[in-house]
Image 1 (cartoon, rainbow, N blue to C red):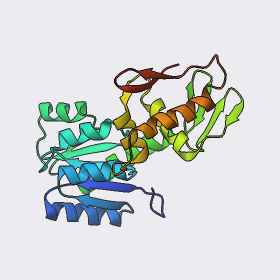
Image 2 (tube, helix red, strand yellow; image 1 turned 90 degrees about the vertical axis):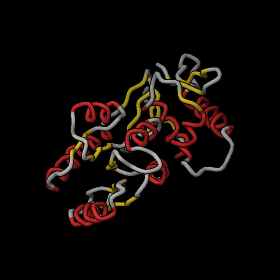
Image 3 (cartoon, one colour; image 1 turned 30 degrees about the horizontal axis):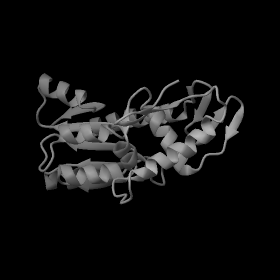
Image 4 (cartoon, rainbow, N blue to C red; image 1 turned 45 degrees about the vertical axis):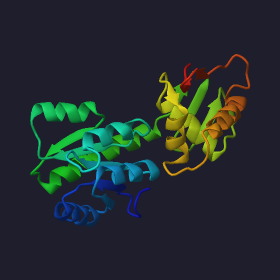
Length: 228
């Protein structure tokens, strides 16, 4: 959800209130719209509910550590994540990156360096979003939200497209109904996980209308996976 000047929409999870406010002011002055949360659980709820362009996480957070927060976000989202922390030793950096972070910035740091790292990750994200995805005979154009089976365009509803895109992002991985529900319907969805099965059926009817196409596979006791 970019701001009017196209910079981006960020989430900052930082428990030091003065630092968080300083970073928010600097980021917004640079053109980034920025939300703040001060603990890991609140940050997780925001990260899973709202589509951010990039997330900044402190490692030492109350309620839920930045490392665990990063891991949980990664279960359902591929949003770029930068870890910000006073712990800059190599083992700490490795742990942060292994948890799913895209970059790691040790305090103290120059605000210009943070801006530069954000710009790099946002450029990479935009480039990735523009690339056509091919899975078997299926072609997906993420930027236009269009899907083709060979040369025929498939008319998917917004929810069906989001479900397909999530499965493609997690291709060859078994994902649970709960993971799908959080990623596609949102963290605060109050319905039953049976809705996932209903939409999987809708999606199969459209992308597997040709009997020779079999992409979505049921993983007994877990959920679903997409394989070509």
